[in-house]
Figure (cartoon, one colour):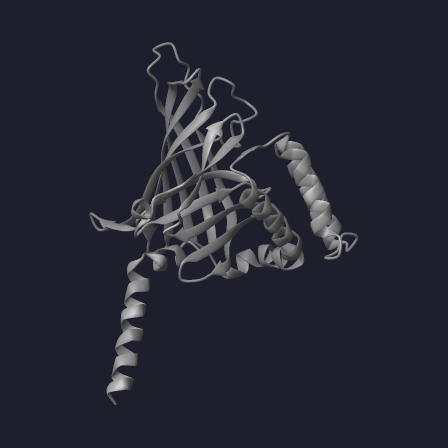
Length: 297
C-alpha cells in the first residue's frame, strides 16, 4: 500500500510541476481563430517624421495546429484560410522549455547562434518564430506570469522587418519587438510595442515606435477544415523542409539568408509538386538540401 501511495504522490507532483511551467497556456494558443491585425505608429524622435498610415486587417481565419506537443516542446503551425477556402501556409512557432540555444537576429538577414546559461533560462519558455519558408525570424525567452489578473508571456527581441513593410521601407532595418501574449477566455491577444531601428556602424537610431494588436478569437473548428485538409496533404513535404533546416542550424553558428523571396516561391512550387506526387519521399530531402544550399551562407 505504501508503494502505491508513493507512486500516486509522485504522479500528482509530476503533474503539478508540468502545470506550473505554464505549458497549459501554450495549449490555449492552439485551435481555430478569427484574427484581426492592427498597427499604428505612435511616436518618433524626429519632429519632421511623416507617420505612416494605420493598418487594419480583419476577417482572416487561422488554424494554429499543434504538430508536436510534449511537456517541454510544442510546435504550432499556423495556416491562414482566406477568400473562398484558399489556404496559405503561414508562420510557425516553436515553444521549448528552458531552451539553452537562441538564434539572435543581427540585421541584414544574418542570425547568430547563442548558447545561454542554464540559470538564465530556468523556468522560462522560448518562443521561436519561423518564416513561411521555415527560415528563422526571431526568438526570445520568458516565464509565463500571472500579473494584475492576466496570464501573460512577454519578451523583447530584434527581428527583421515585418512582411507588411519589408518591400516598402528602407529607412530602418531592425524591428525591436516587445511581444506580449495575453490569455483570454475566448482566445488571446498578441500585443506589440515595437521600435523601428536603423542600425549602422555599431549604433542604433530609433526611426519610429509602433503599437500592434493582433486579436485571436476562438472560432468554430469547421471554419478551419480547409486548413486541416491542406496540412494532411502537405505535411510530409513541410516536415521534410523543417528537417533540412534543422540540419543547417545544427551545423552552423551563423547564417545569412539570400534571395528569400525566391526561396519562398521555390518551396511553394515544390509543395504543389508534392501534392501532385511528382516530388516524393524518395527524393524530397535531396531536392530540399540543394534548394537551401542556394539560399543560405
